Amino acid sequence: MNVRIEIVVALLFTGLSQGAITSSYSQSRFMDRTGKASFFSSAPVEDIEAHSEQVVAVFDTGTGEIAATMLMRSFKFRKALMEEHFNENYVESDKYPKATFKGKVVNLAGFDPTKDGLYSLDVEGEITIHGVTRPLRMKAKASVSGKTIETNAEFPLTVKDFKIDIPKLVVNNIAEVVEVKVSFVLKPM
Amino acid sequence: MKKAIIYVAFLILLIAVVAGVLMYNKPHRAVQGEDPDFKLSVSELVTAFSTDETAANARYAGRIVEVHGKVKEMIPNEGSPVLLIGDSAEPIAVICYLRGEERDKYTPLAIGELVTVKGICNGMLLDVVIDEAILIE
Image 1: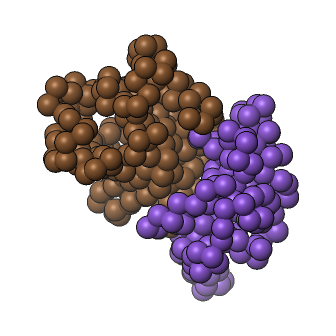
Image 2: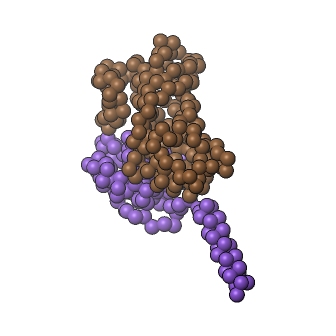
Image 3: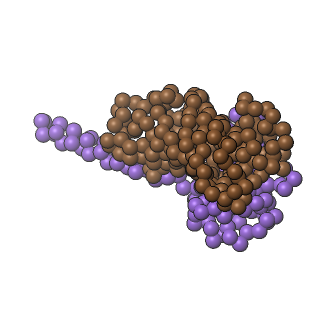
């Protein structure tokens, strides 16, 4: 396996379990380097949505560990001005270029990556955005087909939790809670 | 006199509204037709990021860069066709998310071919990311 990928995977998993990083589980690792993420904000004045296809995600089916990282700057908006405000004023992409998630599937017992089918995964972990780390739980759907695992999940995030200040002037333009969607097509590494 | 003040006030208001609407609808940054802020080889860009990611981010992130190198991998994708450019011996490459309309130029490319790509540098994940990219040659 690519040395760089090994390093990044190690970094992604740091703090979870060092054992998973050493190669004993490497055959159970799946990755998507062009994963998708989007968020939707519904407020009285306008609806805002943004999409990115630049998420790297790794899932270790042996340990249940999941890690994902993305560049905030990769979110695309309908309006250039929204994109500018998002990067410069809200998430401060220069200071905090990445968002990361590290977590674990807690109901791994029922999941068999060698058996085609649909699974429901309970994921618990921590998400870091704008330099602030918060606990996060979600239900993810996983569909195994051959050697590919397609997963998707939706979860709400409260903007305020991440110390993102929304000026009073635009308080009616941006929702307090945004709906986040992620989807990955994971393939063996 | 009073009339004049009303006219001027109205004019200012009109300008403000027009400026506001123009600002709100300001177009997305077009890479096409814009001169790159930096022109360099893939290995130079990769070295910059692997040596000091923070410094490289400050220098390149959000800027238009033009890089040249060899095609390492192609991921056709649904939205943006993706091109990995770099030396096959090097662990880090440059991952380019091309604009959708570049697909015609993208499809005939082959692994190992020399390409020049211009786009907006987003930073580094597994590889250095270039977004909104267009193929120059």
